[in-house]
Image 1: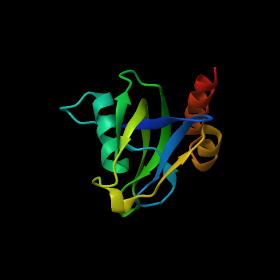
Image 2: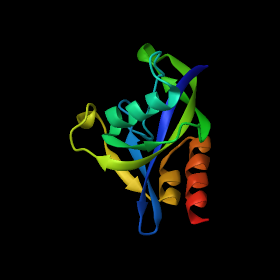
Image 3: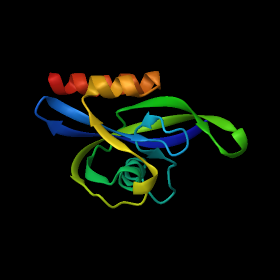
Image 4: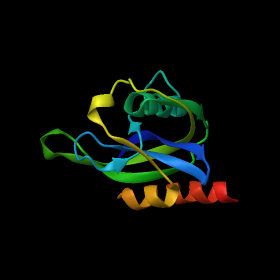
Length: 137
């Protein structure tokens, strides 16, 4: 099993919060920014970097993982590996139009229930809904 890090990016909105979803490069499914950990960065810092590179967002990241989810990561030559993603919350405070993977992905903001419908991974759906409930309390 491979280990990855991800950023569950959110912003405050009139009706609670909105969740940022991005498309994956190859399958174009909706997901959150995620990637491989780096030896020179703490896990939450790597998640923060992925949010910048893949979605052009910066903000305040939590240092403790909010949760985890698993998915099948497809590699080159039709190989695949089960990956477990440690998810860190990132409250978005700035968005940029220009960022490293701008032309490779689509971005959308959705309320938690809508975002949960769009993602395929059941554990990621649960994390999104959990964050939505946390903000309603």
